[in-house]
Image (cartoon, rainbow, N blue to C red; front, side):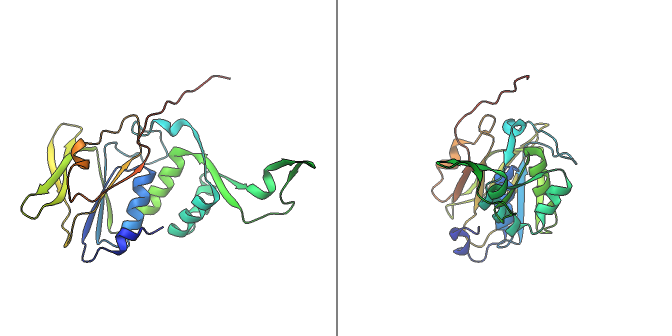
Length: 225
C-alpha cells in the first residue's frame, strides 16, 4: 500500500492531508510511516460515534469491501476486522455465501468456509472505525472545522509550504508543513458534490499534488419501500 513517491522522499518532517474521508484517512496511515507529523484537515467536525456527515453525501448508501481492499485495510490496521464485527458489521464469505450460475445451475463456489472474506457495513461505521484506529498513531493529528482555501507558496525556493485555512467562523489562518525537501500534499477529493478544490492546486509547478477519490459528480437518492 506504500506508494513509490514516498520512498523517494528523504528528510521529510511533516505532511498535510486535505480531507478526512476514507481516502484521506488511508493516505495519512501510509504517510505516518514516513513523516514525523501528519495533519489531516477536515471541513466537518467529527462526532464521537458513527454519524452521517455533510461532507460525505454518499454515506447513506450501503458499502461492501472488495476482498483485496479489506486485506489491505487489515494489513495497515491489524485487527480492524474484529473491531468492525464488534460494532455490527457483517462478515461475507464470498466463496461460500454467493451463488454462481453456470451451465450446471445455481451453486456456491465452496461448501466450506474460505479465506475470501470481506465486510459490509454503513459508510459512517467504516469511516469511524478507521478513524479510531488512526488516532492510535501519536504522530497523526486532526484539524477539524477548517476549509482549505489555497496553498502557501515560497517564491524564493519555488515550492509549496502549506495551506491557507478558513474556519466555520470565517477566521483565516495558515498551516505549514516544515519539510527538508518539497512539501507533499495529499488532496483527496472524496466528496464529489460538495468538495471545493482551489484551482491553484493544479497550477503550482512544484506543488506535488496527489488527487484521490472521485472527481466527477453523482447523485444519491432514498426510496421508500
